[in-house]
Image 1: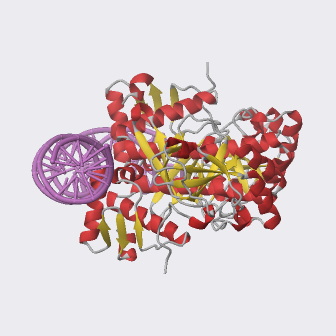
Image 2: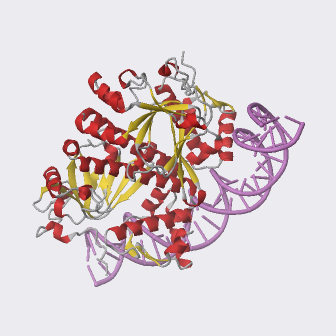
Image 3: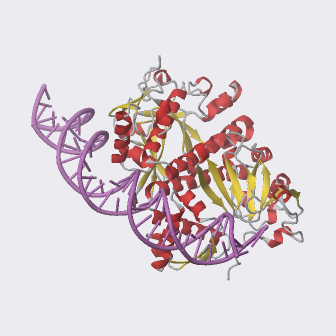
Amino acid sequence: MYESQALANAGHHFGAVDAFPMAGDAASRALIAHPASQCGTCVLRHLCVASTLNDNEAARLKSVVRTWRMVRQGHALYRAGDAFQSLYAVRSGSFKTVAQHSLGRQYVSGFSLPGDLLGLDGIVAESHPCDAFALEDSAVCVIPFQSLEVLCRELSPLQQHVHRLMSAEIVRETAQMVMLGSMTADQRVAAFLLNLSSRFALRGYSPREFTLRMTREDMGSHLGMKLETVSRSLSRFQRRGLILVSGKRITLLNREALGTC
Amino acid sequence: MYESQALANAGHHFGAVDAFPMAGDAASRALIAHPASQCGTCVLRHLCVASTLNDNEAARLKSVVRTWRMVRQGHALYRAGDAFQSLYAVRSGSFKTVAQHSLGRQYVSGFSLPGDLLGLDGIVAESHPCDAFALEDSAVCVIPFQSLEVLCRELSPLQQHVHRLMSAEIVRETAQMVMLGSMTADQRVAAFLLNLSSRFALRGYSPREFTLRMTREDMGSHLGMKLETVSRSLSRFQRRGLILVSGKRITLLNREALGTC
DNA sequence: CGACGTGTTGAAACGTCTCAATGAAGGTGG
DNA sequence: CCACCTTCATTGAGACGTTTCAACACGTCG
């Protein structure tokens, strides 16, 4: 019915090439120019920067998005303080972004799935303000930002789409603040599960059954609570028959009830 | 030493024209084409969209930003659901933006001072997702977004500045999430006061003594706590000699100590 | 004047955190 | 292959911070 949720392996994108052919740290920083990186035929097109472009425009974009990068689980796509050069579109896998805070305090500001854009927060200071770590072996399209700006000046639909993407990011963060500011722990966990679920649905994965790639601690940080509280919320939901929990594996049994926590 | 903090009256901007000549509700919706609305000579230029433009470019921008709007205290600049047409740059006064939430729950997502830009969150859906209310009699420059996009395609510095503004908004919101997710009530109130203080300083007002234009409830909503807790935090700070509180009037006595709450 | 919106303060209730113990899963080297 | 280690997750009991409910004070405005 649904593709199995294998965010780490968008198979045909890589053609015959093993997605992670190199061992060790080198692989996580490799830049690979790949003939298959055609925005026009990308399966993620409807989610990505290319969504509103016609064939000709997509071809132009493709000429800008020439390189890929693979990032092994646990490795950084970029670190806080790195010079900002490019945006990254997640092709496969998933990432967490971690905002560094005064005195070592960390905050997981978000999780990115295939089709999501990473790095918008680096534009203003021309350096990344946060870390981005791969939660599993992942691949991204590298979008050199200066080239994108040049292209945006030529292609009005692309310009509009970039503006919409940035605006959407702002709206998303506002929603997150509402959550942090006005919901109980249970409500936050429920909203998080439902949010993930609908994002999986958009990508063709089952919205009912999925794997949490992040730890309880990451979830907790993102939701403004301790990992123990996350764990307790999940257990409570399971006891009430709303979900099934088996480690990182989650099954939603009653979406409506979960929504009204 | 400092200009008195009169955000509601950036006097000479209006020239000989009374800023709020009309009585009643009509005033809050009035569009006024005004000969003085020259981005090139605006005192807020260093904060605003025009900050990086040369004289010629500023003149082009001025031709796009032709109208002003005045909004009386308590009235809305726009409401959630209103069609998105324009961004607004605060010229004088101040605003709060209120995110509407499921089931009447409200969240004050931010406060805008002169030079700040309002409405970026409306781009993605072409309708405003939140309300914007004037906290005092205020005035804004109206920036028709489509015209701005056209101009951005011509003027690379303007394009870059708009991108930076959007990115800055994203960074700001991330910082707010960190606060909501990982700080105690006292820390949040302290950070809020220090943040306001530095924003006043940027605008030439005293960073030491200022008036809170919002209610305790607005502050609380913005900071993810109840109004009573805000009040208690302020009282505690006063008791410890960190600040002076007299209703909405705040004096910072010890910035360092406040920063390490 | 009384009504209202706003701000302060107190005491008890509540939710979340802290600390601690235990168990399960995954990787490594003998 | 198993013992071992580390990381991750679960659960409990008490401590702590914030909210709730309530009372009261203050200023503005009709």
